[in-house]
Length: 373
Ligand SMILES: *Cc1c(COP(=O)(O)O)cnc(C)c1O
Image (cartoon, rainbow, N blue to C red; front, side, top):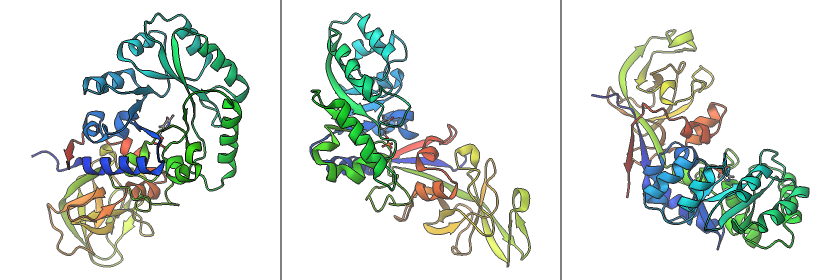
């Protein structure tokens, strides 16, 4: 028998979360962002549930080819655009739309031979200072693109640095920069990631743009945890990382658990040993000290980790689950069989990171099973 660990991908949750993105910004078209192999879920796995989107946004040409092979004939957007000139040949062949964020990408287009003009997304740097033309250079880049026979429609795009932040000031500055740079330029607009879609989609109205680009929310993680939980946004976990107890230990008062003996039983207690460790993608820094544990579900009952996360195992307090035994179900994050939910955001928060990182870090040794719908 293989180790009992597996990751479930829930198609019903993905479809519900996509519907939530669609209803957050009335009238906008929705890119399903599936970079990083659909945030660790597998592009091929999520495709049946997300093909209700208006397009797929991703980074790798190889992933774009995969989405075409899956049968998608609609828009595909390369969020970082082309990495070298010959990527444009693939864009021509597969009808890929691509981001233009730096001058060399315009040079490559000018030298490219294509029968069909390309749809491009011209990216403004609105304060993130990673990719994009500055406010002063944006209009010149647009004029250059507009003059090229290789270029058809140009969509005006930016990515917000602080859509999940508490103060509205930096968001307002970014939106003002976008408004200034794009004033009087024709074309569709694309601005919002998950955080902006959920938090400002309704209030921005038409200002939210023609295309929204939700990623993390599709997978059931809150983009602004802990201010809002996934449940607050009515998002459902698209991934369940689950395993089983492979051993149960009775600890006497004063006995310790795991490497470094970081947890010491204050009284006699039972603990369970779970077939899941950091080599499966569970964060090693998730706390299991006497003061702080990390939440976990055993047979659907919420308890906590005790002791350090090791490569292949974690240990959990069975006090609230007296019937637990070898073979009991353990949910590290996601949805338990009885319906109890433990958001990946809680584990991420305990480990000092974000749901994005944990979902993307699912290890290749953890098999994926697609369920629901
Ligand atoms: C990753 C990405 C998104 C999606 O961001 P989420 O926070 O996951 O919603 C949107 N736009 C761009 C340009 C991205 O790189």
